[in-house]
Length: 413
Image (cartoon, rainbow, N blue to C red; front, side, top):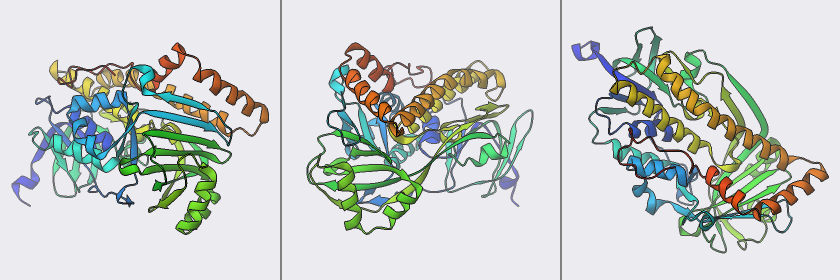
């Protein structure tokens, strides 16, 4: 073995997972040359195409867009994403429902629908010239040893690394969380979500549509070129049956469920399905370890807020790391990590509780609950100032960008 292979590379932060959330943390530290960062990701970016576009998409709310602007990422996504200017929500097959428009809160858009792979590409472009940030992909960790003074790791390519802090951004089935012996609470919704890109007869008009059906919510989200991304939550058996249908029969079922809002849905691309399971890590931090994104929490996708929560985790943790190193503190100490936990847990629990409440209300089989939720939707649509306030909160417009991390950020989220 060569001397270079035996040498130990010292970093301040090693991020396990180079998906959107892990790369977001690295991007948040790009203006901090004193913070040495390494990102380790097992797989290269592999878009799962449906009608020529990645079927894995994220609804990036306006608050998160402001974070990505500060990172220098957002401008790269304008031509590969679609604006969401309004949202319409129905209950079952009832008329009426609720409407949310960006203009109500003085904005041009509520957010944008962006392919996950495009977000990753844009983040990697931002990191390309950062000499203090290294991205190893494809690569994986062969061994990890948590010690009092540091975390010691070996990579499959032969590198030996000493890190002050290891960050788990490796998803819902987090390997790092398991290695650290951190358990998690789990909520099985007994559903699967079918995702695909479809071509409706009529243009989506930059509107996100969500219909709450007896089996679960069906969302149509606007994509470029008039396409829509669908997220259809169904009971396991029903989802499996629909996945086995040929395209023509699947479109028949989809048109029956969604209705004629956009005319007939004429074409569907490759379909995927994934189980809906909520998770909450028992601990977000322990000595020399922090969890962010799905490694820390997984919420129901009915509002599409999962990646937005994860990016908020990333930016707050980056802030605490940058502050610690600026004041010559240990970024892996519990004194520093407790600040991240204190900041993030209330936001995460609040969003998770809200999603649980929505899920229970909109899946209840009791007729009286159905009447109350329809009345509530009507009242909310006409509530004026209250509606605007709740919309701003849901869009992440009431949280401040940590200016000491992203020095180019000009806006507040």
